[in-house]
Structure formats: C-alpha cells, structure tokens
Length: 92
Image (cartoon, rainbow, N blue to C red; front, side, top):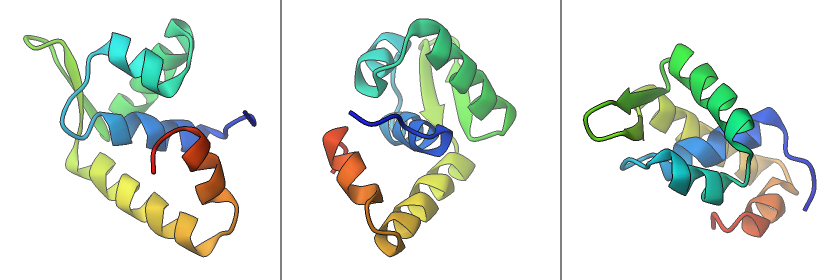
C-alpha cells in the first residue's frame, strides 16, 4: 500500500465515524498505530470535525466532519488516482 497523505487519513477516520466508532475499531479500519491515531483524532477534535462521547466511549464525525467527507469525495471525482487508493483501503 502506498503512503497516505494526512487528508486521506483524516477522510478515512471521519468516514468510519459517521455513525460512531470506538478507538479499537478505528485502529483496525484506519491501519494506524495507537499513537498515530490518537494524534490525528486530537487534530480532528481541535478542528471541530470530530467529537468524543465519553459515556459511550465513541468518536463521531460532526457536521463539519461530514462536510469534509462530502467535499473530499468530490475532489476524488475530479482528480484521477485518488479513488484507486481509496479502493485499496476498502472504502468504496
């Protein structure tokens, strides 16, 4: 698998947290180490694209995060090659 850029990783995390996801499930879906995943989760939370629900212990994409998903998918339609990489990740 090719190295992924930060935006690809952010997209994958937000995609898998649309309806909520625990960190262990995210680790397997995103294929990152715990420390790499935590760093990116914190970045997304600071950017108000991701919320952590403490009682349920799940991460969930915010409306801003869902807009990022939609816009990133539009970009992938325009730029060739991005969709091929996403298929390797099992997203589409």
